[in-house]
Amino acid sequence: MKSLLLLAVLIGALSAGAGEPTVWRLDQTAQIGGHVTEVLGAPRVTDGATFFNGASDGLLVPANPLAGCAHFTVEVLFRPASDGPAEQRFLHVQDGPGTRALMETRVSGGTWALDTFLSHPATGTRLALLDQTKRHPADRWTWVALVYDGRRMTHYIDGVKELEGEIAFPAMAAGRVSLGVRQNKVYWFKGGIREVRWHSTALNAEQLQR
Image (cartoon, rainbow, N blue to C red; front, side, top):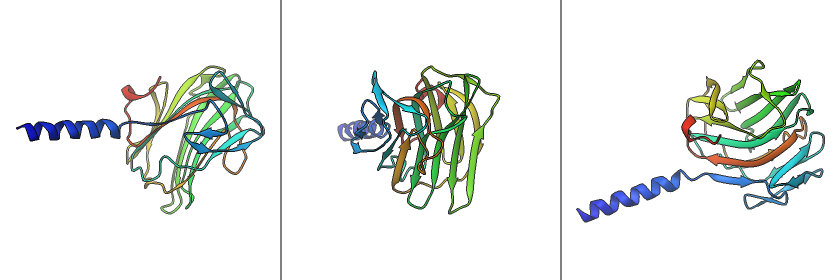
């Protein structure tokens, strides 16, 4: 009986540990999540967040926290500027074979819409989630999330589901992440990013930051 109880405790501890996210805090630009970054332009750190100018600032991180994940959640606490470019990529994950996951904004009239995108070139599958009528006020901190459960891609704003769609998206390989810009150095982001959370599980709405 004691051995069964001990086994249950160990399984519970392992399950709890498996749910721990990898947290990247952007309170400096030289290193993020223990990785030495490549700094583009001169992003500035203010009040524990990194701000990008929408024209030449970005960070390249030589790691892919989504590598090997059949299910995942990416959460970002960010503050898009109302005067930023119309189309921006604030987070871009890409592996060696070219599989991509992106989080983007469409800015207009002091508001923005969230655009999320998954693409797997080996299988030819790709899906973008964007509804330009779902607008959110700029110049304020907001949590956004991209979730993939092995079959369905969903994105959320402050824990509220906005859009979803089905896509086959096999696990990514090793790669890198860009923040504040697409990895080919176009579609620069103007605004701030305070934190990125990477989960190897598909969180539900109640588990998301808001």
